[in-house]
Image (cartoon, rainbow, N blue to C red; front, side, top):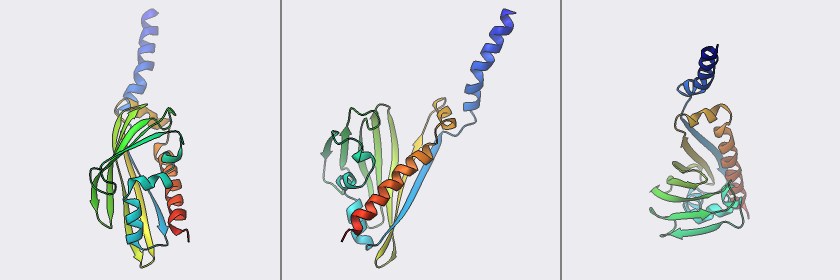
Length: 178
């Protein structure tokens, strides 16, 4: 009888680990907004990481967070770092790793606490006409096995997508202000 109980317990414990083998480990989120300004003006604004303080939801979550900077903003190698006691903000940094002038800026996000991860993000601008610009903000993430089980309980794409969209909607308001 004890063997049957132990075997049953082993099966119950093993099921989530087996299930995790079939669950995705990566996710990707892209959100878009159209801004009624020329592409050059929009790109010049978004390529400055310090400007994210004016539109990014994450930059505004803790008014007490400590921010530090290394390098020249809007250039490859510039690093914007943050530190917060708020566990939803934590500690990390963001570095500009590539710029395709007028079109795309790539970032590397390095989260230090409350968890460690390095993830890519980017913003692109595309001229729709002389006075309208499409802006995409994208983020990718990864969760190693067996932590990828969290994908069953938390919709990271929807959660992060909502934050990106809120930031883009705020960016639109900031840039279209007369």
